Length: 412
Image (tube, rainbow, N blue to C red):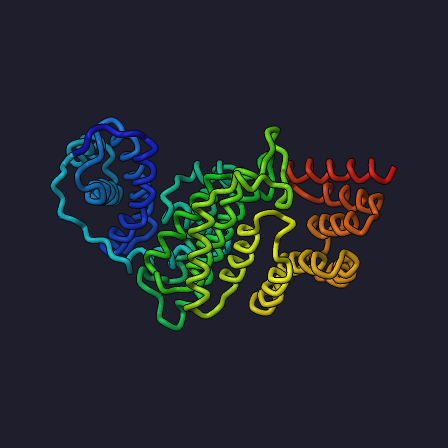
């Protein structure tokens, strides 16, 4: 057993071990619901014991032993015996290596993103079972009541039981579709962390960092998959700008106005290398294209030197591969940078009738930006105010209101 260590180091180790240990238990005992609860208890026990007593020589074995004991005694409903035997059982360091496999980890990720589950349930279950986060941690990260997260996780487990899903790799015909759901869940987690959809903070770093960690883990399991690599590259290239996105007072700083000296060059180099390699060797996918767009922005020495023609071309291709409302709006911005704001406004007037864009605050924000560029500050101010009223993010609202005031001042 190692010497006592810091809680941060222990927390990172437990995050990495959680899916391995759960995979081992489910493979042995098949009951996903009970095994997941037992692993959570073992993780909590380790988080309490390891910083004080040191990390055991075989951390996975320690967790498997404790979780197995909790599982067995849960079945026996023998709480008193559990309390008596926990310490002696947990401190036995000589457990044989339980032998987690890549298939275990992949099967667990696929199970958490089962098609019978809703996206919010997939997100909650993935963070808990694969990420090792407690229900309370997930609730804090998403700014929702702990009871809401607990209910989502409980219902997700029930749906998995009712669906008859087994802990095994999906048939080959289902894997690509299921992998798409996995990538979508990781992307949702990252986006909520990078730009929170509601609340007082623009960023929830614990979520974006966890999404990157989980995507790295998935890439280690599927090193040849282009979209897994593309998603990781996209996250790295986006998160590299995090330090420059907020002013000293917490105000939002748009991409064009950020101090690029604050960007993380190491993350940019890693992300650029990843997307370059995968675009050259794998079929082109949506995440790779988004990563390529992020790379063009990150590699530009200044906002004025951005290769907007290349960005527009990539968005044109992305619109064919994976059309969506945000792709539409971002393409319009790129179009305006290439052909002028009037061309962008004309495109926006046609696009805003799409059902997914009706009433969306980003439509009004884009309109305001283009009206500013077109020399119509009074109309831009009105659009900024409408966008501010529609957003649920407090930092975004403050930014949009500030832009509205600035546009009003120019119109006077």
